[in-house]
Image (tube, rainbow over the protein chains, first blue to last red):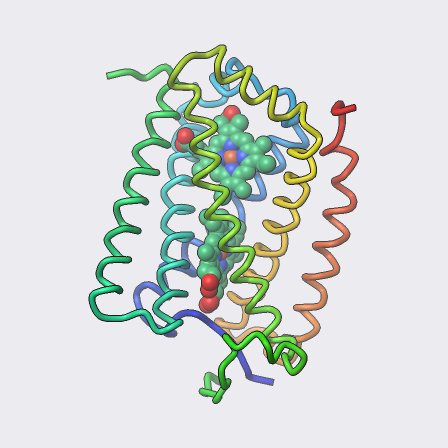
Amino acid sequence: MAERYSSFKPGGTLWLLQRVTAAFLVIVLAFHFFLLHFVNHASEITFAGSQYRMGTLSYYSLMVTFLVTATFHGVNGVYNALVNQGLDGTQKTAVKWVLVVASALLIVQGIRTANAFAGISF
Amino acid sequence: MSQSYNRGLIEDFGRWREFTAGMWAWIFHKFTGWVLVGYLFTHIAVLSTATIGTGVYTETLQSLESLFIVRVLEVGLLSVAVFHILNGVRLLMVDLGVGLEAQDKSFYAALILTGVIAIASVPTFVEGVF
Ligand code: HEM
Ligand code: HEM
């Protein structure tokens, strides 16, 4: 019973980073759902509440780390899945850069949003 | 431990009747992973209303939450996330060589647990929408 399916080439850097981010995400994602659905109900989310949470450095940095790791994990997952399906050559390079740019934009926008909550402005 | 198998064309979904538990696990993991990244982009877009104004953010979130369909989608999102987490933990264990004998069983356990958690969360998720 050693059959296993993976979109990744085992042992590579991207493979390893996918596992490392996964281990971190298990904890933060579960915490995120718990906090925003069960402790605070999703329907009761207000700017003031988000501002209050994001106002502490520990929560702010946890959320930014969450943003970065989740983006990396998700986009890396998509990229490896496409490579696994046979994407190569120019298409592979093009897709890679589109994904890199999309991730960068997502992270920048996520941080701008986090700053809006935390009251950080430049 | 890690052998390569000729898996044939799994991408040929027409063969689904021949799929083993391992293939289903892989397909579900892919599906849930893609839904989660899709959600992440949408999520940041919605939260970004906070950069426009404090009132805009609160109103946007509250009006979304007042829609029944959004609540249903949230239960769906929770199920998808729970499955991806549980099955992901299972994959991490497999990579570490833990529980290789129980791969099928742990996959079924992940499925059942996802179902139970999803159903148990329904009351919390629909609270106040009616
Ligand atoms: C339906 C379930 C969810 C709800 C109600 C929710 C709600 C929120 C809220 C209100 C915030 C703003 C911070 C705060 O108020 O504490 C936030 C931030 C965040 N959420 Fe979620 N979330 C959900 C699911 C998810 C999922 C599944 C992911 C991962 C794919 C995710 C990733 C993030 C990230 C990365 C941030 C930080 C954003 C930033 O830095 O600007 N959330 N979430
Ligand atoms: C919370 C804990 C999580 C764990 C334990 C986890 C675990 C994993 C693992 C081990 C893989 C590699 C599967 C393979 O070898 O093919 C993977 C793939 C993937 N994950 Fe996650 N993940 C988590 C959260 C997330 C989040 C938050 C997102 C979205 C932002 C996400 C999106 C994906 C995608 C798109 C793939 C690639 C799927 C494919 O092969 O097509 N995951 N995950």
